[in-house]
Length: 274
Ligand SMILES: NC(=O)c1ccc[n+]([C@@H]2O[C@H](COP(=O)([O-])OP(=O)(O)OC[C@H]3O[C@@H](n4cnc5c(N)ncnc54)[C@H](OP(=O)(O)O)[C@@H]3O)[C@@H](O)[C@H]2O)c1
Image 1 (tube, rainbow, N blue to C red):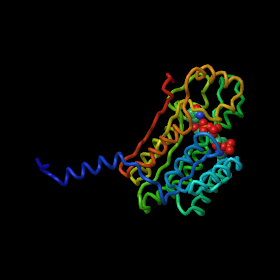
Image 2 (cartoon, protein in one colour):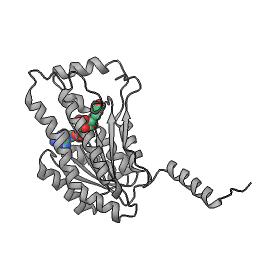
Image 3 (tube, protein in one colour):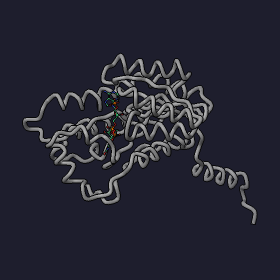
Image 4 (tube, rainbow, N blue to C red):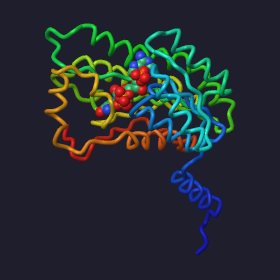
Protein backbone atom coordinates (compact mmCIF):
# COMPACT_ATOMS: atom_id res chain seq x y z
CA UNK A 1 0.00 0.00 0.00
CA UNK A 2 1.24 3.43 -0.86
CA UNK A 3 2.10 5.65 2.09
CA UNK A 4 -0.86 8.00 2.77
CA UNK A 5 1.58 10.91 2.83
CA UNK A 6 4.29 9.98 0.34
CA UNK A 7 6.12 13.30 0.78
CA UNK A 8 6.37 12.68 4.51
CA UNK A 9 7.62 9.12 4.04
CA UNK A 10 10.28 10.39 1.69
CA UNK A 11 11.30 13.09 4.13
CA UNK A 12 11.59 10.52 6.95
CA UNK A 13 13.67 8.20 4.79
CA UNK A 14 15.89 11.08 3.76
CA UNK A 15 16.43 12.04 7.39
CA UNK A 16 17.31 8.52 8.49
CA UNK A 17 19.80 8.33 5.66
CA UNK A 18 21.23 11.68 6.65
CA UNK A 19 21.60 10.65 10.29
CA UNK A 20 23.65 7.63 9.33
CA UNK A 21 25.59 9.62 6.80
CA UNK A 22 29.17 10.61 7.40
CA UNK A 23 29.97 14.01 6.00
CA UNK A 24 33.16 15.16 4.37
CA UNK A 25 34.84 18.22 5.84
CA UNK A 26 36.10 19.59 2.52
CA UNK A 27 36.39 23.38 2.46
CA UNK A 28 36.33 23.57 6.25
CA UNK A 29 39.13 24.64 8.59
CA UNK A 30 39.88 23.09 11.97
CA UNK A 31 42.20 24.25 14.76
CA UNK A 32 43.46 21.52 17.10
CA UNK A 33 45.38 22.50 20.23
CA UNK A 34 47.84 20.01 21.66
CA UNK A 35 48.31 18.49 18.21
CA UNK A 36 51.92 17.45 18.81
CA UNK A 37 51.04 14.16 20.55
CA UNK A 38 48.32 11.83 21.78
CA UNK A 39 44.66 12.67 21.27
CA UNK A 40 45.30 15.99 19.52
CA UNK A 41 47.67 14.45 17.01
CA UNK A 42 45.25 11.60 16.23
CA UNK A 43 42.34 14.03 15.93
CA UNK A 44 44.19 16.36 13.58
CA UNK A 45 45.08 13.38 11.40
CA UNK A 46 41.44 12.20 11.37
CA UNK A 47 40.00 15.62 10.50
CA UNK A 48 42.56 16.10 7.74
CA UNK A 49 41.65 12.70 6.29
CA UNK A 50 38.04 13.92 6.14
CA UNK A 51 39.14 16.88 4.05
CA UNK A 52 39.53 19.66 6.62
CA UNK A 53 42.51 22.00 6.45
CA UNK A 54 44.00 21.74 9.92
CA UNK A 55 45.93 24.23 12.04
CA UNK A 56 48.18 22.32 14.42
CA UNK A 57 48.97 24.17 17.65
CA UNK A 58 51.36 23.16 20.44
CA UNK A 59 54.80 24.11 21.78
CA UNK A 60 56.93 21.34 20.17
CA UNK A 61 57.36 22.60 16.63
CA UNK A 62 59.42 19.61 15.45
CA UNK A 63 56.54 17.27 16.25
CA UNK A 64 54.04 19.53 14.51
CA UNK A 65 56.29 19.78 11.44
CA UNK A 66 56.44 15.98 11.20
CA UNK A 67 52.66 15.68 11.41
CA UNK A 68 52.12 18.49 8.90
CA UNK A 69 54.47 16.76 6.46
CA UNK A 70 52.57 13.49 6.86
CA UNK A 71 49.23 15.23 6.28
CA UNK A 72 50.62 17.05 3.25
CA UNK A 73 51.97 13.85 1.74
CA UNK A 74 48.55 12.24 2.15
CA UNK A 75 47.04 15.09 0.10
CA UNK A 76 45.81 17.23 2.99
CA UNK A 77 46.62 20.73 4.15
CA UNK A 78 48.16 21.59 7.52
CA UNK A 79 49.45 24.78 9.12
CA UNK A 80 51.96 24.58 11.94
CA UNK A 81 51.44 27.07 14.77
CA UNK A 82 53.95 26.97 17.57
CA UNK A 83 52.05 28.33 20.56
CA UNK A 84 51.86 28.11 24.31
CA UNK A 85 48.13 28.59 24.83
CA UNK A 86 48.57 29.45 28.51
CA UNK A 87 49.83 32.78 27.20
CA UNK A 88 46.74 34.70 26.14
CA UNK A 89 48.50 36.59 23.36
CA UNK A 90 49.80 33.35 21.87
CA UNK A 91 46.36 31.70 22.14
CA UNK A 92 44.74 34.63 20.34
CA UNK A 93 47.53 34.69 17.75
CA UNK A 94 46.98 30.96 17.06
CA UNK A 95 43.35 31.64 16.20
CA UNK A 96 44.19 34.77 14.19
CA UNK A 97 46.87 32.98 12.16
CA UNK A 98 44.50 30.11 11.43
CA UNK A 99 41.90 32.47 9.99
CA UNK A 100 44.43 34.63 8.14
CA UNK A 101 46.31 31.73 6.55
CA UNK A 102 43.59 29.13 6.07
CA UNK A 103 40.77 31.59 5.43
CA UNK A 104 38.15 30.69 8.02
CA UNK A 105 37.43 28.62 11.13
CA UNK A 106 34.73 25.95 11.31
CA UNK A 107 35.98 23.59 14.00
CA UNK A 108 38.02 24.01 17.17
CA UNK A 109 39.24 21.07 19.20
CA UNK A 110 40.30 22.49 22.55
CA UNK A 111 42.46 19.55 23.56
CA UNK A 112 45.76 20.73 25.09
CA UNK A 113 45.86 19.61 28.69
CA UNK A 114 48.04 18.35 31.49
CA UNK A 115 47.28 15.95 34.34
CA UNK A 116 49.45 16.23 37.45
CA UNK A 117 47.98 13.92 40.04
CA UNK A 118 48.80 13.49 43.71
CA UNK A 119 47.52 14.40 47.16
CA UNK A 120 46.30 17.92 47.86
CA UNK A 121 48.01 18.10 51.24
CA UNK A 122 51.54 19.44 50.71
CA UNK A 123 51.09 19.42 46.91
CA UNK A 124 53.56 21.47 44.85
CA UNK A 125 51.34 24.46 44.12
CA UNK A 126 53.17 25.15 40.85
CA UNK A 127 51.61 21.91 39.52
CA UNK A 128 48.16 23.35 40.31
CA UNK A 129 49.14 26.54 38.48
CA UNK A 130 50.16 24.51 35.43
CA UNK A 131 46.88 22.59 35.34
CA UNK A 132 44.67 25.63 35.88
CA UNK A 133 46.79 27.65 33.43
CA UNK A 134 46.40 25.14 30.61
CA UNK A 135 43.24 23.07 31.23
CA UNK A 136 41.16 26.09 32.21
CA UNK A 137 42.73 29.37 31.14
CA UNK A 138 44.30 28.11 27.93
CA UNK A 139 41.02 26.51 26.91
CA UNK A 140 39.13 29.73 27.72
CA UNK A 141 41.53 31.93 25.76
CA UNK A 142 41.22 29.75 22.67
CA UNK A 143 37.43 29.52 22.97
CA UNK A 144 37.05 33.28 23.44
CA UNK A 145 39.22 34.11 20.46
CA UNK A 146 37.60 31.46 18.25
CA UNK A 147 33.93 32.13 18.97
CA UNK A 148 33.41 35.13 16.66
CA UNK A 149 34.87 33.09 13.78
CA UNK A 150 32.79 30.01 14.64
CA UNK A 151 29.65 32.15 14.80
CA UNK A 152 30.56 33.64 11.45
CA UNK A 153 31.11 30.17 9.93
CA UNK A 154 27.78 28.96 11.31
CA UNK A 155 26.04 31.91 9.72
CA UNK A 156 27.76 32.19 6.39
CA UNK A 157 29.41 28.89 5.43
CA UNK A 158 27.91 26.30 3.11
CA UNK A 159 27.38 23.88 6.02
CA UNK A 160 25.90 26.64 8.23
CA UNK A 161 27.15 24.93 11.36
CA UNK A 162 30.37 25.11 13.38
CA UNK A 163 31.87 23.09 16.23
CA UNK A 164 33.75 23.74 19.44
CA UNK A 165 34.82 20.44 20.97
CA UNK A 166 36.29 20.63 24.46
CA UNK A 167 38.28 17.65 25.68
CA UNK A 168 37.43 16.94 29.29
CA UNK A 169 37.81 13.57 31.04
CA UNK A 170 36.06 11.00 33.18
CA UNK A 171 37.74 13.18 35.82
CA UNK A 172 35.30 15.90 34.78
CA UNK A 173 32.43 13.75 36.03
CA UNK A 174 33.86 11.73 38.91
CA UNK A 175 36.11 13.19 41.64
CA UNK A 176 38.69 10.95 43.32
CA UNK A 177 41.26 11.17 46.05
CA UNK A 178 44.57 11.99 44.42
CA UNK A 179 43.08 13.97 41.47
CA UNK A 180 41.60 16.99 43.23
CA UNK A 181 42.88 19.83 41.11
CA UNK A 182 42.72 17.88 37.84
CA UNK A 183 39.09 17.11 38.81
CA UNK A 184 38.54 20.82 39.45
CA UNK A 185 39.84 21.82 36.02
CA UNK A 186 37.87 19.18 34.11
CA UNK A 187 34.63 19.75 36.06
CA UNK A 188 35.13 23.40 35.17
CA UNK A 189 35.47 22.55 31.49
CA UNK A 190 32.17 20.65 31.71
CA UNK A 191 30.31 23.52 33.37
CA UNK A 192 31.72 26.10 30.98
CA UNK A 193 30.88 23.96 27.96
CA UNK A 194 27.25 23.48 29.00
CA UNK A 195 26.76 27.16 29.72
CA UNK A 196 28.31 28.16 26.40
CA UNK A 197 26.31 25.48 24.59
CA UNK A 198 23.07 27.06 25.78
CA UNK A 199 24.32 30.50 24.74
CA UNK A 200 25.28 29.72 21.15
CA UNK A 201 23.37 26.60 20.11
CA UNK A 202 20.52 28.68 18.64
CA UNK A 203 23.13 30.21 16.32
CA UNK A 204 24.30 26.75 15.20
CA UNK A 205 27.62 26.63 16.97
CA UNK A 206 27.63 23.19 18.57
CA UNK A 207 29.60 22.97 21.81
CA UNK A 208 30.54 19.40 22.68
CA UNK A 209 32.33 17.70 25.50
CA UNK A 210 34.44 14.57 25.08
CA UNK A 211 35.31 12.73 28.30
CA UNK A 212 37.91 10.02 27.83
CA UNK A 213 38.86 7.41 30.38
CA UNK A 214 42.43 6.11 30.39
CA UNK A 215 44.17 6.62 27.04
CA UNK A 216 47.69 5.50 26.19
CA UNK A 217 49.40 8.86 25.51
CA UNK A 218 52.25 10.96 26.87
CA UNK A 219 49.93 12.48 29.49
CA UNK A 220 51.24 10.21 32.25
CA UNK A 221 54.88 10.94 31.48
CA UNK A 222 54.53 14.33 33.20
CA UNK A 223 53.58 12.74 36.52
CA UNK A 224 55.82 12.67 39.57
CA UNK A 225 56.18 9.50 41.66
CA UNK A 226 52.99 10.14 43.71
CA UNK A 227 50.85 10.68 40.62
CA UNK A 228 52.39 7.74 38.81
CA UNK A 229 51.49 5.54 41.75
CA UNK A 230 47.83 6.66 41.54
CA UNK A 231 47.69 5.81 37.82
CA UNK A 232 49.54 2.50 38.18
CA UNK A 233 47.12 1.41 40.89
CA UNK A 234 44.09 2.14 38.73
CA UNK A 235 45.14 1.20 35.22
CA UNK A 236 48.09 -1.18 35.08
CA UNK A 237 45.86 -4.28 34.81
CA UNK A 238 43.45 -3.07 32.10
CA UNK A 239 43.58 -2.57 28.35
CA UNK A 240 43.43 1.20 27.96
CA UNK A 241 42.19 3.24 25.00
CA UNK A 242 44.37 4.44 22.12
CA UNK A 243 44.36 8.05 20.88
CA UNK A 244 42.51 7.19 17.63
CA UNK A 245 39.62 5.84 19.75
CA UNK A 246 39.04 9.39 20.98
CA UNK A 247 39.71 10.94 17.57
CA UNK A 248 36.86 8.73 16.29
CA UNK A 249 34.49 10.39 18.75
CA UNK A 250 35.53 13.90 17.72
CA UNK A 251 35.19 12.94 14.06
CA UNK A 252 31.69 11.61 14.73
CA UNK A 253 30.66 14.82 16.50
CA UNK A 254 31.83 17.21 13.79
CA UNK A 255 30.47 15.21 10.87
CA UNK A 256 26.85 15.10 12.07
CA UNK A 257 24.25 16.90 9.98
CA UNK A 258 23.43 20.47 10.99
CA UNK A 259 20.36 19.54 13.04
CA UNK A 260 22.23 16.99 15.21
CA UNK A 261 24.32 18.20 18.16
CA UNK A 262 26.18 15.52 20.07
CA UNK A 263 26.59 17.37 23.35
CA UNK A 264 28.66 14.90 25.33
CA UNK A 265 30.54 11.62 24.83
CA UNK A 266 31.98 9.64 27.75
CA UNK A 267 34.35 6.90 26.57
CA UNK A 268 36.02 4.48 28.94
CA UNK A 269 38.16 1.45 28.24
CA UNK A 270 35.77 -1.49 28.54
CA UNK A 271 37.53 -2.76 31.66
CA UNK A 272 37.64 0.63 33.42
CA UNK A 273 35.12 0.50 36.26
CA UNK A 274 35.13 4.03 37.63
N1 LIG B 1 45.42 10.26 28.17
C1 LIG B 1 44.38 10.15 28.98
O1 LIG B 1 44.24 9.11 29.69
C2 LIG B 1 43.33 11.20 29.04
C3 LIG B 1 42.13 10.91 29.71
C4 LIG B 1 41.16 11.89 29.80
C5 LIG B 1 41.36 13.13 29.25
N2 LIG B 1 42.55 13.40 28.61
C6 LIG B 1 42.73 14.76 28.08
O2 LIG B 1 43.10 14.69 26.72
C7 LIG B 1 43.80 15.86 26.36
C8 LIG B 1 45.02 15.49 25.54
O3 LIG B 1 45.90 14.74 26.33
P1 LIG B 1 46.75 13.47 25.80
O4 LIG B 1 46.30 12.33 26.61
O5 LIG B 1 46.68 13.41 24.34
O6 LIG B 1 48.18 13.88 26.37
P2 LIG B 1 49.54 14.33 25.64
O7 LIG B 1 49.97 13.31 24.66
O8 LIG B 1 50.45 14.69 26.76
O9 LIG B 1 49.10 15.63 24.84
C9 LIG B 1 48.99 16.89 25.44
C10 LIG B 1 49.13 17.94 24.35
O10 LIG B 1 48.99 19.23 24.94
C11 LIG B 1 50.03 20.05 24.44
N3 LIG B 1 50.37 21.12 25.38
C12 LIG B 1 50.85 20.98 26.63
N4 LIG B 1 51.07 22.19 27.15
C13 LIG B 1 50.71 23.10 26.20
C14 LIG B 1 50.71 24.52 26.15
N5 LIG B 1 51.09 25.24 27.19
N6 LIG B 1 50.31 25.11 25.00
C15 LIG B 1 49.91 24.38 23.94
N7 LIG B 1 49.88 23.03 23.94
C16 LIG B 1 50.27 22.42 25.06
C17 LIG B 1 51.21 19.10 24.25
O11 LIG B 1 52.13 19.61 23.29
P3 LIG B 1 53.47 20.41 23.60
O12 LIG B 1 54.11 19.77 24.79
O13 LIG B 1 54.23 20.23 22.34
O14 LIG B 1 53.06 21.82 23.83
C18 LIG B 1 50.50 17.90 23.67
O15 LIG B 1 50.34 18.05 22.30
C19 LIG B 1 44.10 16.60 27.66
O16 LIG B 1 43.21 17.67 27.82
C20 LIG B 1 43.84 15.55 28.72
O17 LIG B 1 43.48 16.10 29.95
C21 LIG B 1 43.52 12.47 28.46
